[in-house]
Length: 449
Image 1 (cartoon, rainbow, N blue to C red):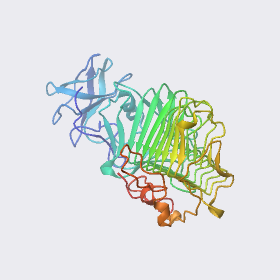
Image 2 (cartoon, helix red, strand yellow; image 1 turned 60 degrees about the vertical axis):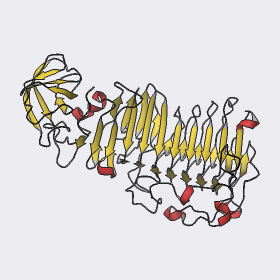
Image 3 (cartoon, rainbow, N blue to C red; image 1 turned 180 degrees about the vertical axis):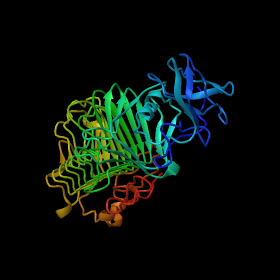
Image 4 (cartoon, rainbow, N blue to C red; image 1 turned 90 degrees about the vertical axis):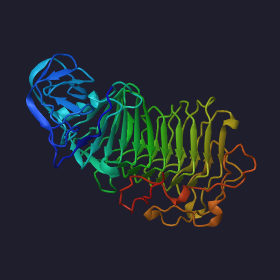
């Protein structure tokens, strides 16, 4: 496959969905006389300023519409990496900027793309239907949608009960994207519709605070499995579970993420995949801080997190098929929750596979309503003191006492000479999400990379 010559650009203000492909000459070349013969050769076009690696758009009546140019054969012909259906007198374009990802032809890019394609949004976008993202040559990698120049760009779904993206045996990748939903009935951003799917988010935001245009969460499973990876992301007052959902089968991995004010759980999975979290915050959500699902096997590894003021437990699961699984929750602040700190009432696994230690559960007004643990036993380095966070209203969860900074379990290492204790709670007092996000009333956003 030919390496693309750059990113595929979309600009709602200055782009065109009828006279541009998004990648190629700065000023697009276009026309209406393209002929395709069922191969990778396209004739009847103009190739002035066109190079291998540029993107050709042909408005075919069926099948593929977008392909990377492998060679410029003449002033009127190119050969592409992929084949087009038979046709003549077709609208075509190379270069410039496309206008909207919601355009019916533009949406085909998500089926035509290869794993080295990157769609770059130069401004905010709006869609009114779910975009189907299907796998091509590499479903493990797929291609990306990013905000231009590392800044946050929004994609707003305007249709009720409709996800932004529907996956079909594929993987999606997002970087510097803010997802909004202005419809009366919100849906998640990514729905794992059919097959095994994976969704990856980096520096992304779902929602915009109380009363905003908030999707129901980042992801959930539809007809297939869905594994989820989040880095530096925030779920801000989602109308469901912020990260994942209880219908989602698959893994959830989160680092430097925050779920705040969501109507359901902050983080959730159905339970038959692993839950791995580090330096995350789940605060003031309507369910559990983390809900790891029901009765199926899945390992749990959680370190240096804050789960506070959630309606349910800080961490909760009803898993009972855990004979081959392990669980580790260490160095976390788990306070002020409406049920237990850690609730695992059906644990029937090997006790040696469960490790809970170095956690703080608060005291008095900051204690968990039902107690510290249910179903499992804590360790000798657990504490029960007021965390005295510096300023949770502005996202600073730094403990207010020096002892809290060093009271946790020692660092996991094979070097026995290392004995220093690790901090309890999020490192540096915050978890990040979306480098350009400015709602400081919801979170403290300093990038941790």
